[in-house]
Length: 308
View 1 (cartoon, rainbow, N blue to C red):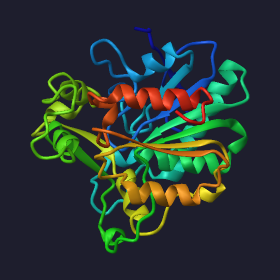
View 2: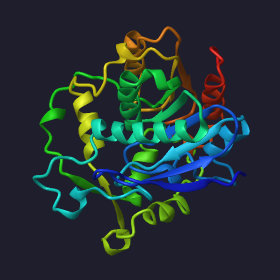
View 3: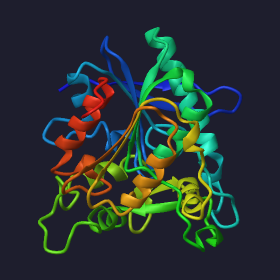
């Protein structure tokens, strides 16, 4: 088990301070980009049985980094959190989140002296990473899109009134964590009842205990970005992504399905692009019993293999 270094990236000109964590190594740098509802401490850095995805990346020789977007974990809360959510634009949309990612990438490059990093992004985070990849490709080596959001043409999503922020309870998380597991199949979550993960999630928001039920306040921008993508308006153009890219997801993933992967693969501008579907996994496969296959697939690709 490695010892993560946690620091704060100072904000300038009104920018939020961002929590940044690192499992340091002299190897190539990989930055994890988290999804819509929980920060890096509860995803890439969360240890089940003493081992996290960051630990796995470090064991493979990578200089592993992660961070929390504004509104999550240890990073600053956005101004929209101090106002009522109704009638406010959703906070934390992909363009502003991509600027936060750009700050982290610049920090990693300055710290390591390297010229490029790789990005490992999950779910909504793939929209942010994809947008960054189209704007600053010179800084990237490889891109992993885990459970990526793709464009769909479903009508009605764009008409939903999305507030500035929302609350997520442990029950909310558990419901979405298990909804795609086939009926009758044994649980695949490493902690089926979120006995430790759940309280740790609530602890990421100091105000969670004052709510009933206890819940974490998060920006609604990711929901708006996903709704826009599923109404035909992606946050980025996949054809402009030129770096080697891996699309990877669990076979039971209802958020990122076969049609989504096919849409992305047909449009990615990368000369090297791979699609891998892993058995017995959902959209949260990194928290599930099958996570070793995900770690292996992503790790081999990030190491330069083209047939992980």
